[in-house]
Length: 156
Image (cartoon, rainbow, N blue to C red; front, side, top):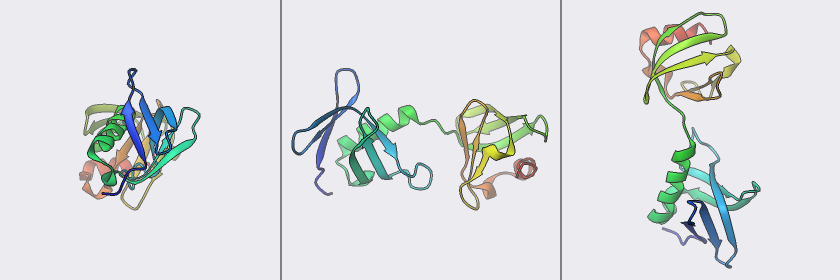
């Protein structure tokens, strides 16, 4: 494990505070993933309240456990990307349509405004934005059941 060029802790208000090696203090920093889906634990930026990067992390695993846990907890509190496990039904094959889903977080409903809200991230991975701005992930198309794939194919 390499030496970390900064310290990270929570202040009395629960905000992350970064202190650099030269003693510079940045209150209210926010961790941001460079590649949230493809490489969630690599390439993280710590940005200040003005949106300027104050630290870069190559790999979360290289950090001391205490600092890594603070960053992971902060990310988890802001990130909400349910994974679609099954598509139960769609109200219509024309948009907008309402989809009934089973996700890794339970039953959900997604309102698809248009086919352009389905983004292909790779050959087997999709990100679907619903009308309320929630991002739903299909991690691997090939792992969906036949019924779900058949419904989804109508929109791709």
